[in-house]
Amino acid sequence: MFLAVFSPKGNDAVPPDAALMHRLLRRDVSAFEQLYERHSRIVYSLVLRILRHGSTAEEVVQDVFLQLWRSSARYDLSRPFIPWLLTLARNRALDQLRLKGERQRRREEQTEQLPQIAVAAPEYEKALDEKRRAERVRALIGSLPPPQKKAIELAYFEGLSHSEIAASLQEPLGTVKSWIRNGLIRLKESLQAAS
Amino acid sequence: MNTHDQFRELTEAYAMGSLDAGERAALEAHLAAGCTECEKALEEARWLVSQLAYLAPNAEPSDMLKGRLLQTVRAEAAGNSAAVPATGGTAVPWWLWAGVAALLLFSVYSAWSERQLRGTVANLQQQADAQRAERQQLEQQLRAAKLQTQEAMIWMDPKSKKIMLQPKDPNLPQLEAMWHPELGLCVRGWKVPSPGEKRMLQLWLISKKSGKPMPSMTFWPDANGTFSAMVENPPDTMSDTQALAITEEPIGGSPQPTSAPMWVGGVS
Image 1 (cartoon, chains in turn red, cyan):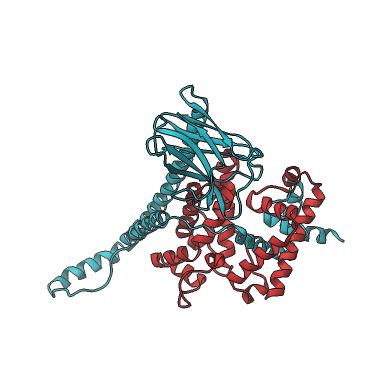
Image 2: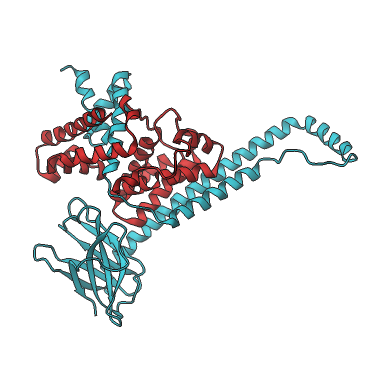
């Protein structure tokens, strides 16, 4: 039931994201609405988890979707859409968390233009639907020892560096690096095995 | 292990954004040198890292957000289509054909100027779009700056009243709030444990008249247990509020408390 949030709304007749992005290039408002319906929940969930403040999270989600609408021509249609959108939303939310000066500089760089984020789906991606991938991710990360899980969460949701995580958890730097890398390798192996 | 393998091992952490400056610069130099294998590994690492988003607890944006977005998008779409010259045929009286022919002749002669004009219109449209986006960014920055200033004033102004929120559990830290009669209410704390999964903290104002809790903001402490939150417009005045309370609620908050208060502080 919980994972229903990660399943796009609607039925099988709903066009895939690439087709909707094609229509968005022609300024098709209904395509924008369908993309929003399909992905706003996971984007909002991610941004809220990072910012922990509802109204600020909504502002960031609004920014992300407006940027998508206004700069859709810069999106590379050959790239997987959802990982790209999630990467964009995470970057925006982490910018919001950082110091004001740094945030302003990054925002100026990003104004109006979609950043070029090259994301490539691995071979096994197509064999696993979004819902099953979400289940796998939660199960695998949930099975890690708590300090390792915490290190990955601090890196992903708080945007902390290896050194900052080592200081926060009071663990050796090398241990933190291994935790994060090994955790991601185990996640990759788990997703490969499930596909 | 050769140097290339060492760089390959950094791609996941680079995609995560967790590399320290030295390693990050070294990997970027390696990528800039044209290592296609590491470039491909990095693109796949970005995909893998993006999957961590599914760890975020389920939350739903408000309907108002969708309404605001669609209103903006529809207005911009209408603006663009209005800028495109209307085409297509309708029934035209025969006597107008002479005029049409004259106009056609004129348009042939003025084709070059028309192209110039269209280019100018397109440029102006782009500039208008860019200015609109810039204005929105500035408004957001101004609002953020205003909120920061307002929060600082609430904590420093002698008109503010300090309220200590005592924990029900002695293992929890004490929280502090500051209420300014005009500027709003701030609450902050340190070493506050994270709420349970799919839960967040919610502030309540206990009405002096009815004794009932009125819902206010929701928030989370950060990884270090620190939080600082502000309510610009509390649902009641300080003089009509008996106490502040904080409970743990489902994500998104509750209209009524669903758990016992974890902190309480008397107001007036």
